[in-house]
Image (cartoon, rainbow, N blue to C red; front, side, top):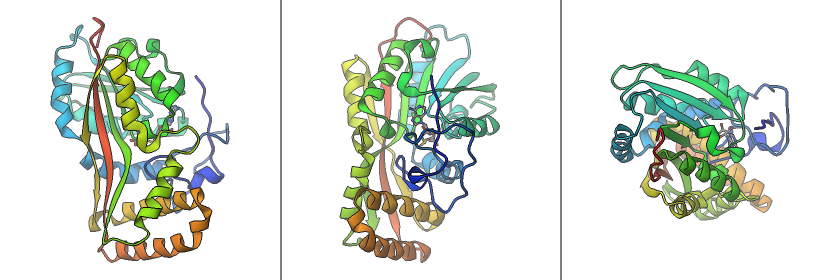
Length: 313
Ligand SMILES: C[S@@+](CC[C@H](N)C(=O)[O-])C[C@H]1O[C@@H](n2cnc3c(N)ncnc32)[C@H](O)[C@@H]1O
């Protein structure tokens, strides 16, 4: 497993996923090692989006997940949850208090700086008051092996699928299915954004942003479809549920940062849009500041239930 980071440079103001690393937020201190190709995520951005993420996540997938966890073999021990691409650990803070029973969360990320936040903000108690413990694992999900998930009761990932390549998704899916445990994969962008009131440039900026999300081999808005296809091919049953961000006047700070990153990525993808996009951004920020802008950023959550292997899953 390897780790690398890019504390500065073009990626620092580029939305590396469904959300930006806001240019307005403080620079990230370098942990020491650098590799230009690997985007980094500002903890401030992940913290800013955490309430909107929590409000968006699909609760309808929780009951089938709880049933599967209640029926798992070897269920006498703690639930062992691997959260892949954990960032600052928002998935654990949301999910751990919604599941019964003692839990041990293993938080995976390639960025040690974010893992530090995941440790500091770790959830402490399950829904029924049982203890929750957390450890971290630094590494590259693109190199995940089924062995790394041996004994897992559940794999989770949030806002991750759309920043993976098809090859990484295949590796990830094989590891999950190999471990025979369910996977809850939340908040993947699907390439649709609704802005109210409408503006003539909405569609063009959306298309340029989506093209940016697909840069290189990244799946971007195709991630959910690709994941469903690969998990299905591996024999797992897959359920998809919408999980949109619904941003209004009460989320103005998040909406403003999201707009800056969204438009910035569109311009990075299509530099000829720079002048009209700047006017568009200023108009949208003014709408946002005046409390008259509504944004729906569409995402999907996916619950994967592989055939049990007879192990801990
Ligand atoms: C958009 S952030 C989401 C973080 C967190 N799951 C959340 O919902 O707030 C994506 C996270 O995945 C991590 N990540 C992306 N690609 C990765 C890879 N190949 N291996 C390990 N971590 C990765 C990033 O470092 C980042 O923390």
